[in-house]
Length: 110
Length: 112
Image (cartoon, rainbow over all chains, first blue to last red):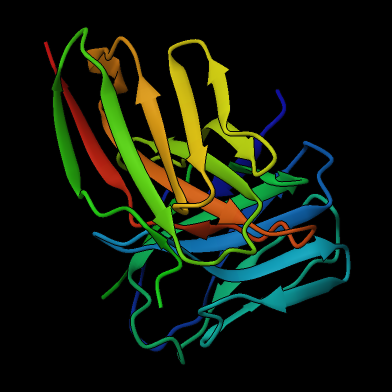
């Protein structure tokens, strides 16, 4: 099946710990994106990558880091520098203007 | 500065009637618009899109209208079904950048 997978669905971490969220796609899309959703808010762009080995900051990149070593994979690390890391994180891959989303990871920092 | 605005946080409609969800934008450089549907704890799913060279696009029960002079677009769902109950996000992009700017969403509830 073609699609985008994010793992795990739910993630709990202690404050001060870094955590990496996984995103894999087999749609052969060049572009991949990470968004964050908070209650009552739209989706806010964290980082995006339009090609392997290249990525750009989105609107709220502080406290996050990414890598894009393979076309299929775009992991997001939430560092201890992120002040409010508890949120629902969504990964997407894109073909031209249309983006297709994974199921999301709910991160809770205790 | 919110460039894409969905001013109605929620909308309630009877089954079989029309649902109209609205979206306004401020950036005149946006040239492609999309609607996504999202259920709780799931990723958004793409519904329908429209390019700025058109003023209407239809796909089954879903129609999107674009009024460039008013910087306004709307999504019409006819007839509405209980399974349409979800949060609907409007999004916009410009040129070949392909970054999407999202509104905050409208929760649609379709009552049987």
